[in-house]
Amino acid sequence: KNNIINIPVESNEVYITSFPSNMDDCEKIEISEDNVNQGKENIRPECFELLRVLGKGGYGKVFQVRKVAGAASGKIFAMKVLKKAMIVRNAKDTAHTKAERNILEEVKHPFIVDLIYAFQTGGKLYLILEYLSGGELFMQLEREGIFMEDTACFYLAEISMALGHLHQKGIIYRDLKPENIMLNNQGHVKLTDFGLCKESIHGGTVTHTFCGTIEYMAPEILMRSGHNRAVDWWSLGALMYDMLTGAPPFTGENRKKTIDKILKCKLNLPPYLTQEARDLLKRLLKRNASSRLGAGAGDATEVQAHPFFRHINWEELLARKVEAPFKPFLQSAEDVSQFDSKFTSQTPVDSPDDSTLSESANQAFLGFTYVAPSVLENVKEKFSFEPKIRSPRRFLGSPRTPVSPPTHPPAYWVQPVPVQTTGLPRHGQEARAFTHEPMTSSSS
Image (tube, rainbow, N blue to C red; front, side, top):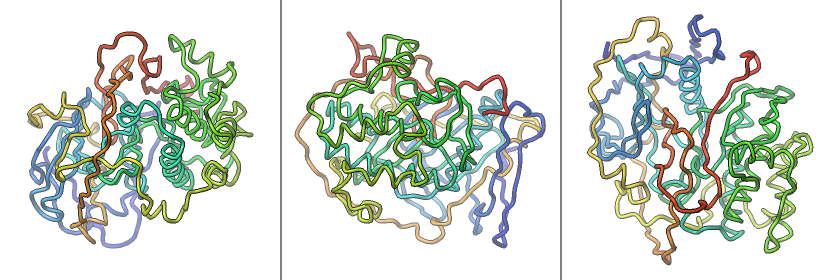
């Protein structure tokens, strides 16, 4: 109890740990240990000073923290704290938590959130992630109402590169929406929340898990006919439509009507859209997944070759040399102005770790501990500020009241706070992310 797992790695060998056999109705996920606890640093909760609360979920909290000991001392991070006792009640929650941590370790990309440390105590799991001070793209979209095409093009281009990188590694994302896209201090995109990802999807492999957020969900997921990475390109099309019109392409008064529209209704395109935007939307939002843009062998390169992106210099974009259309006004590295004051105004307290799990339950989290190699190489990354004052926009308020608030905060963030609204929200529909496994677990 309360001991940090420390596994020194002396070579480049890969250590594999699988789930205990009593989790039969859960997909088996291997944990890579090739970068676990390199060096001698012993990471524990006391290494971090709590600064602000960034979000809450039924399984834990997300804090803004400052590292006060060891490598990277003084640097600001986001710390996600999860209660083991809550997670182990459901085998699939345990699997999703492990898969999320696994993917965060494996995937390193300029447009995907960085996992810096992962460690555990007797009763809690800790994920230390880069602090993304620009907040959610969702909030920026709320302030603007809709984006101009050149603005949408910038964000969609960066997102397409992140999705392409995931697909190269056999990972499908499955929950692309404005709430899961964060911005760094320079306004560049970072994908977060990998709890609904599916690994090992290559070639003709398909999966059948019913998961995601309805308004952005591809028809083949709704039909449970089997899906692959092409679902992410449908979601990119739905996100593009949302950016350019103020709502996803298919919304209804309730979930059933929304699903019916996704499966049956004609795509309505506003007349103010350019021909390039209209054509890209039509190609991404094809109900036949095999004919959808990006479904072929070229994957992301097919999408990026479309004329809508003709002005993008992809090499400069990947190097983050292209200036973002929105750069957050930040006073310091600790600035939380882009986040919900309902959380940031609270006193940050990490409740005492007084849980005791059985040895078999703790086995589910074997191999969780991690230290990013970048910490050992260069921990003093410069944080520069060039504040840009933008013209004030009318704040529309969040329409994203979850139907059933998630119990588990995602990799970085939590769902927006439910608010009372009058009339229809911007999207005309409440949204939530959820997962529903089919009866046959082997198809998940």
